[in-house]
Image (tube, rainbow over all chains, first blue to last red):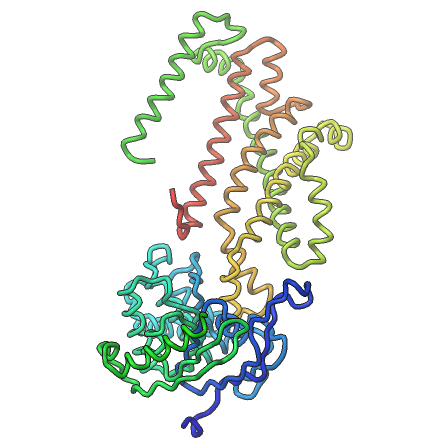
Length: 261
Length: 250
């Protein structure tokens, strides 16, 4: 089905053990024999019971941790560490509080040597895309949780990464803000396509946003099932109550609950 | 401070001064001269050396404070740079830290005599110890997620991370250390001036004590307080400008 699409990120034979070599008792096998292909401009989500290693896998793909075994290839090249080609929106609030909204957004480009004129254009473009017009000169302490997440998103996008990773990005937000952020993320992706891989606990969120949902087993984390979501790019809000959507949701809940036993 | 509360603060000071004045009527002037006596008599006695004394003390404090603070912050950054530098610097810092700086005065007089050098170095030592510990802790408390975020945004070199993230994140905590070091610097200046000086506010206090002019002693104390308060206010104003971004919860 995705043969004509390019593979952006390839995870092969990946294991991860926490505390390896520290002592036999403290070793924790977090991930076991993970093989995953992420295609270009695809939104893919990772879901599974707590402690199944999905966040660990995200950190490994982002290069913030090194696998115990196996390799991760970005467009055929082995990744060896973090880099601007793989941006991350963390669960925690990672927007730099000492910089204004626009200074945060231009952080990556500035580091990369982009001149002020182009930086200003970039900032304007992404401030508009995430809907933060008028807040450019504000500090994060003056913003709500949802607004800070938008700054984080804009900051990542402005850096033009190959892949965008998100670790339960909307987990800390209230239900209404979360729904708005989901719609906005989808709209952002429609306007500027990117390969996105995110971790979530929310089955509905996974089905709503992604093309594929990867379901993990309980620890040690293995890929249990990959579900293709056939809904089109333009997903309106009321799709969440459609019977097809609920079918997918029911199936996934059953699969996950089986893992929690 | 809230607008309406300023009069409360002024009131409490007024009450203190009034109680002081009243008490002084019942106590011999050797022990407690009244506030008016303190200001008037001392001014008459010392007004021609007043400016020189104040500027001498201020010069020592500023020189020692800046020398010690800058070196302290620098050493803390060194210690946070890599494990080798940490292993090298830590023992020296840990040995210096518990030493009561006042106890170094006789040693410094022996080594540097009674001139400016010894006093400035004493004050610098005090500021150094405060700032090196304060800065190191501040650096260790930087949220790891900021560094991870910076890395995924393209900050690959340690120097970039230090310059754009760590040094920016620690400024609120550093100001705390600076305020403490500034206050301590005045204290060390006073001690150094007590034990051997020809000029300065501490010198005024010692001279007054020799002649049993308690009003002069209190006058010197008030001068120190005033200078310390001015210094702290300046630091707080700078803090308000640099750290506009900070979220303070109370």
